[in-house]
Amino acid sequence: MNDTIAAISTALGVGAVSIIRLSGTDAVAIANKIFKGNDLTKVKSHTINYGHIIDKEEIVDEVLVSVMLSPKTYTKEDIIEINCHGGINTTNRVLSLVLSNGARLAEPGEFTKRAFLNGRIDLVEAEGVMDLINAKTEKMRKLAINQVEGKISRLVKLLRDNIRDILINIDVNIDYPEYEDILVITNNMIKESIAKIKTEAHKILKESENSKIIKEGIKTTIIGRPNVGKSSLLNKLIDEDKAIVTDTPGTTRDIVEGIVNIDGIILNVIDTAGIRQTEDKIEQIGVNKSMKTLDEADFVILVLNNNEEINEDDLKLLEKTKNMKRIIYINKNDLASNLDKSKLQDEIIIYGNTVTEEGIDALKDKIRELFGIDELEQADLMYLSNARQIGLLNESVNLIEDIEAGLTNNVPVDIIAIDLKKIYELLGEIIGENYSDELIDELFRQFCLGK
Image 1: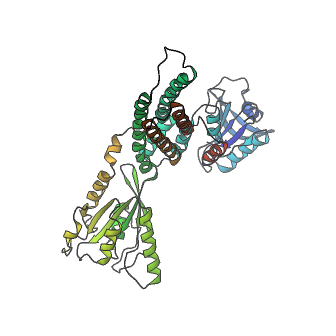
Image 2: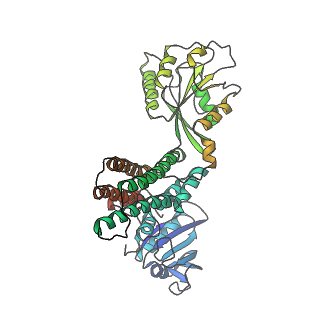
């Protein structure tokens, strides 16, 4: 990290302002070579300086240059930000001058990578930066900003500190048995401490289940036999005529997708081909794809026709989805009812129709209730937010359970300490206290260029 990196930090295109960012020991000197105005090597830190970017004697652009000197910067290195007029040609020309005068083009996420490697932020905070950039809803933003501010890291660090305290006491007992005034660590004492840690870890894991809903949304499949109103329901939910609607059964032959935002939670909704036995090869491909979406769905809306009796295809779908989170939407309640409701005992049922839109709001309310969306509205959103973090904490909990079993069987404390050290290392991996170069390279490669 001895070189100086540079990249465009704003979206490339027509706009009022573009920002070219430099970071490294030569950032100020490189910018000063192409800047006509104040001597940037002599200005105070955290100042904005008016002038021009020049290429030899040619004026390239009128700019404002921000100078921020180490260590009080995002990367803890000297940082220069050149604010030039937006536009592809001007922005690329300024970047080209920066690179030709000694900077190297930054890799995706390299500014944030340097912030992590220089100790400015930990790994959870770094991942929060990327989540903040990608946030599509207010809840996603809140979840990400809690990571960026270190609130989630503090939860992990507290668990790690408690593990460390147990290890310190065990090590003292093993290394200095002759001292009479030290606290003698017994299996029962460790068991009590480890139980508290396990409870807190379980709490973090349980609450972090909500992060998947917030970040990825709810994979929702609308399923049912042909002509029950699935496509009409999708159109009403997304408030857009996206799916083709006709009176002809089998009109939908491929999956149609849409997005519904319910109080900041995204429903990724799929309208599927009607499920029925068919000799039509193209329709059968659609039916097979529909059934496959069920394997990946978090939630199912099973649509039945109020005007018709439940048939074998309906019963197969009821059986197929019985162990899934689902709502039965009985459509066409504006028509005479021929549905035998005795076959729908203990089901969550919403009645409605897509002509008057009756039942649409009730369906959304039931989804809120089913996924606890109202509770999420009041939550502080301090959750682990990705599979890497959650997987490491799950592995730690499994080791805690092994320790509890060992303590019950009176396993010696020096053997218990081995698992405790492993837990300490796993928790350290979450926040980046321990890491592999491969992990860091892969993680920051997912960032956008210039961040």
